[in-house]
Image (cartoon, rainbow, N blue to C red; front, side, top):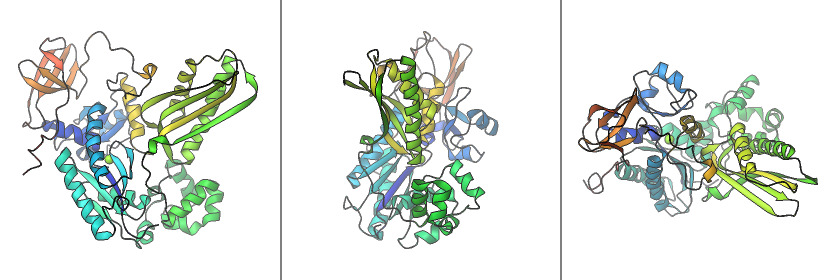
Length: 450
Ligand SMILES: [Mg+2]
C-alpha cells in the first residue's frame, strides 16, 4: 500500500435527485424521489430532504409513498444523468489517466499516477479544487474521500457526505476502521453480514480478532482471505481504467454435441447461475451479458445485450442469456456454451436502476450499444407524458410534466435558471404541447466566471 492519501473517491450527492432539483427550481429544498413508479418499483435515489422521512434507495416505492406522501415522485431521466456524468468524468480525467468509474456518479482516481498529488497537502488541495470545479461546471455537489487505498477512499467519501471532503491519514486506517460495522467493508452484503453476526462478529475489529483461519472456515477461502486483509485495512487493489474491458465468464465443452434445444436452454441457465456466483464472489455486478455458442462445425458465435445498469440478479442474467439464445441457430448441435458478464462495477445503486427503469416498461433512452431486441416495446399510440420529463408549450414555453391522468396533463413552467414556476393543466392531446430536450443545468460563463 502506498504511504500517501493519493487515491481519490468521488461520489456525487443524491445524484439523480440532485440533477432533478437543479433542473426544476420548484423542487429545490423539497423531498424528491426518483425511481420506478410502477407497482413493483423501487427507489433509485432520494434527495436528502426525503431521507429525513426514512426513504432510501432500494426501498419499495409503495413504502416510500407511505413515508413521504407529499414528496415529488419522478421517473429517472438517464440521458440527462449521463450527460452530467460525462462532464464530471471529464474533470476527473484532467487529474489522471487512471480513472475508474463505478457508476454514473462515482469513480476512483489515482492522483499520483497523474502527477496531480504526491502527499497529504497536495491531495487535499486537489480534492478541494475538484469539488469547486464540479460545482462550477454542473451546479451540483459531490463528496470526496482521499486515502492510501481504494477501500479507505470510498469509506472516506461516505463519511464526507453530503457536500464534504474527508482525508484519511496513512497510519490511522486501522484505528478508524476498527469500531465500524462489518458492513462498511466492500463485499459484505446483508447475507454475509447476518452470517457474521450469528458468529458474534459485528465490528471490523471483531473480524480482525477472529483471525484468518476462522474467517476462511466461516466464509470460504476466497472471501475469508480477502475480508481478513480488508479488516486489517490492507488493500492493494489498483485503480483500473477501462474497467469495461473486463468480464467474468464461465463455459462448458460437451463430450457429445447437444442437439436438444430444451437441453441447450437448460445448460445456458445453469451457466448463467454459475456466472452469477462468480460475480457475487468477486463483489461485482455487470451491465453486458454475453452468450457464446460453438456449434458442431466449430463455428463460434457470440451475442451480447447491454442492460441499463449493472446487475448481479440471477433472474435478470438468466433471462438475458435466454433471449440471446433465441437468436442463435443450434439445430446442427452445440459443442460449447458460455455465459459472461462484462461492463463490471462494484455494487452500487445502479443495480437498482436497471430494475427501477424496467418497472416503467417504456424507456426512451436505452444505451446505444443495446441490441435491437433489447429495446423497449413500441410506444403506445397515444402520447405518454411521463412525470418529470421536459415539455414545451407553444405559448407558455419550457416546463416539465408534474403529473397526468384522466386525459389531462399538468405542467410546471420553469427552467433551471428561472424562479419556481406556475402550474397549468392541458388535455393530453393538446397540439400546443410537445416533448422537449432537457435544458443545461449551468449556462456557460454565467455561474463560472463570477
Ligand atoms: Mg452518489
